[in-house]
Amino acid sequence: MSKITRIIFVGILCLLVAAPAAMAAGKVVIKGSTTVLPVAQAAAEAYMKLHRDVNISLSGGGSGDGVKALIDKSTDIANSSREMKPKEMDMAKAKGVNPVAHIVAIDAIVPIVNPRNRVRNLSIDQLSQIYQGKITNWKEVGGDNLAIVMVSRDSSSGTYESWSHLVLNGARVSPKAQLQASNGAIVQAVSKNRYAIGYIGIGYLNKSVQALTVGGVAASAKTAMSKEYPVARPLYMYTAGTSKGETEGFIKFLLGKKGQEIVKKAGFVPVK
Image 1 (spheres, helix red, strand yellow):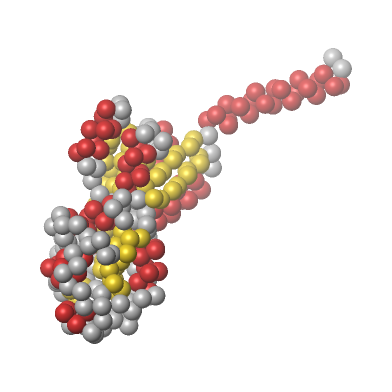
Image 2 (cartoon, one colour):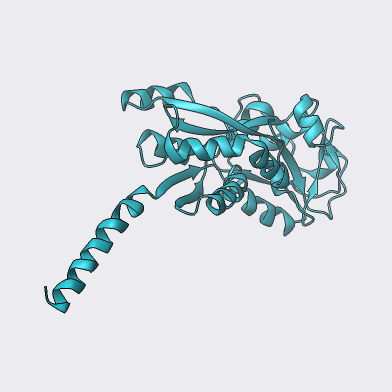
């Protein structure tokens, strides 16, 4: 055997040995809710540090987009800040997908205003009337004589769905509301507008906005878990059937001790 032939043979052998290792590398695709995104991102980074051969890709877009991706079989995990709807379940099953819900955290949806706004508390009824466009001036709820600018999530958002259910009792948000595609976009919009009001997941609170109490109750881990805070909801990760492989490993990690510590650090409420 010539020297060149030996080199080629060794090269092919190395490729054959390396191929199973490359094929064994796991990949998990996660899409959906921007509310769940910070938890998923932090957990994914921690999981990949422990499992160097695993690659986890993440994208937001809203709960509705995540659910669609699960139905279309283009994601392993759908992040959702709401339960799947019956029609979505039917669509999934028609395509041979059996969605399984995993509650990974508890969230409080917090109404926020600009720090220069002197309003600090609103009732559920006041929030409902504001977002239906029936209360239009801050002076009607104890604030300055300024027109209220509503900032809302768009209709593909699970946070929008939960707000509509828990605050508006199923009524639609006024068409005058400024629609935003993410929690972060709402924070930015409210922080720059003295007249604005918005609502976000508790994990997105920062000093650029002022959180309001609801009916005199502040959003916190304790009040969300006890349901004393009236605008709290579970956060989900949906899988197609019983999760397997690295998808199962990731879900188990997130629901374990280290994963639930990540949930807490992200500003949400652990379920365990």
